Length: 107
Image (tube, rainbow, N blue to C red; front, side, top):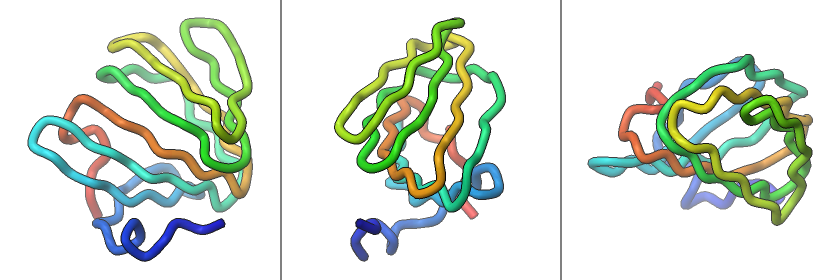
């Protein structure tokens, strides 16, 4: 199921090619709604603390050297400054929460 209009009316974020994002901006945090338009590999990186939940599809995550696959209804938590990477599968939708207000840049 696609995101509803109240999500897709939010400002769009800038992510890797193949990922589309809408951002709910707050003074000290962001909630980011993401959909994968194709398979996308996000290389290893770090940033502030992250929590997320897969809504549809699956994401293979490597967090601090441990790889796991998260599917619809499953959550993840990444502490600040922990190296992680993702492999998004086409059609996957997820919501991510960051405790930094500028994690995802706006278009």
